[in-house]
Image (cartoon, rainbow, N blue to C red; front, side, top):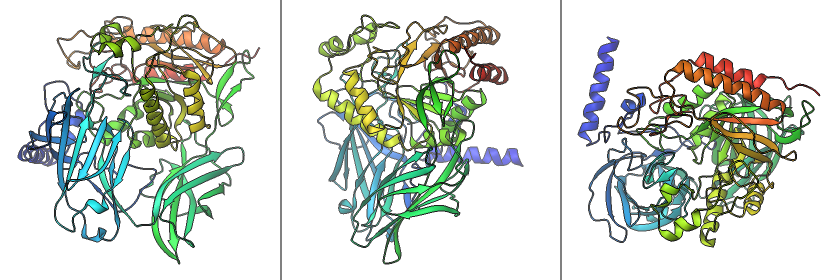
Length: 632
């Protein structure tokens, strides 16, 4: 009966998809979760786990789309696109490129619940790459630039009193033909540069709020004083309104959609400090999360309420008493060697977007099972639920800023001359000598700070993040001291890795060397935390699990012939790391979590098949993290 039920469910889903005119595009490999995507309700989960309201509506699903000339108007749809998957992806059902000079249009109808009348309706976008021009019922409601951060518009005044509402979104995206933050996206993919991503790639949703409502909050923990400071921003407050913050009993694996009712502390005001008795600290080893509830009341009546969570956790740069008294990363007062994979966050079927929430969680859980305690999120930003799962599972995160440029000679040839020339700076590659910063136009410097600031504001509430990385390998690196100062001002509670493998100015907390394939520290500075931000890249091809069978698959150290050969080399590299720990290395990042397109350096294939024995990986990785540092 179970097999019959499964067959009937799959058949129904296939018929439902066909009836709605959707099927994955192209013939490239797909993950096992691709078949679980429901075109009627993709990514149905609440998208903002740190600030949960009960009244909301998911708009994901099949929308009309069209690709036109940049200045042309939207007239008629070309077909259906599955939101929230980028138009270039297989799961969008489209699989087309857009690029400079073109516009991608979305058109969608929805209804507002009758119970939402006389309240404010907010339209939320998780992320749209890159410029989104939004209108409702033909009325402009807002414009947003930046491909990695959530934004919302109050659309109340644009709504009709009843019936169908029409949402239209125009998207422009030049990818690497200018200076916008775009990470590893390029118009002409090759090597370490991947397929461009255009348009909506995270959840689109509505929520209803009263005139007086909570706009946002930020919770900052103080481990030394065993307290949490919560700052609330509210809209429409009137004299006499009461803002109240409750700290609730938590747990490992805390779910803000099913919050605890046990209140540990409470206080009134827009800025409060809550004491935490017998505090349980968050770490990768013990990821304890406390619940938060924030409400606004007027004359005893609750107008608005949100549920969220927070944690007590401290990150610091300190000199270790062990070894040669080098600077180390301290978590809650203890030196921790942070070790984890470089995580690109790409998917063969969804590109920037995981097929399902379970898939999004899968990479995080596997990283933990392999014995790592950290992830470096490489020049990409994930949906809020990714960081939530890192908080729940227990992994430290180094968060990169998506780069605005690169200096790959082959890729530079594909860009406008003035852009290519300014991006062709010199990268010193593990030396203090010879590096040059990019000649970034002032308008794009301003945009960098706008987008980086929005990223930090969106993510700084997640306990897992412990390091900000403004630049990588000199790609678009400019005014390093100013960028580090900006980052510190936005969030003084984390460490700043000024330029991972880049042009070193000694203005951050971390000096980050890259070396392939084996781990070596060619640069060192005693005043800094010294880390190995990238190494490894051991390549191995698993037949039947590669992006393009006719493509030129590659690894940083060539291609091994068997999993055993890879693990032998991986273990040897681990032995080198243990020596580096003794001489001051405080963290290491292995390249990488998964294969991506033609790059086969992953611990898993692009479609998420484990290449190597996870028990062996775990034993090796845990031996690196726990290896003692000799006391001198």
